Length: 140
Image 1 (cartoon, helix red, strand yellow):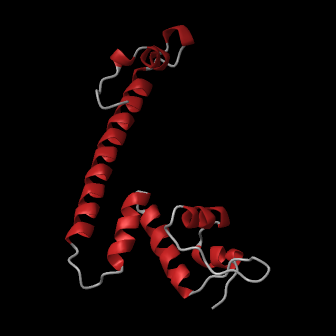
Image 2 (image 1 turned 90 degrees about the vertical axis):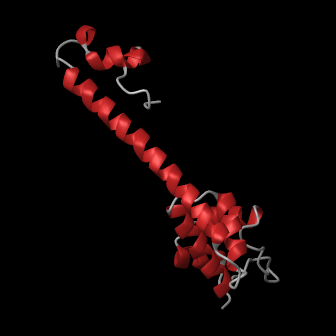
Image 3 (image 1 turned 135 degrees about the vertical axis):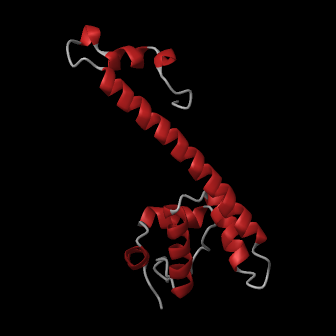
């Protein structure tokens, strides 16, 4: 396989500037180049970019993806560290969900308390102007 960067982007769903960025930060190796200085990619880069894209879609941070990629090169090693990374990420997702639920509740309460009259009596404006009027401490 000898793909130009545009074809690699099409096959993996990763944009060309993102591929270049991943090369720059070392998530994928700099590919060989043609005499015309065009990058050329193969199956290894497709697989690696698919891994990275999927991990990013699941919200993993770049540093964790780097660690997970390194682990994937040691197939017989323990997966304890990969498990730890995934568990930490799950805890962070749970925290975000909790904050989003608090945000949803606060927005719903503000809308319900609004008299739908004039701005000078608008509960939404009042609450936005004074954070102490929020019912939830988790809304930030």
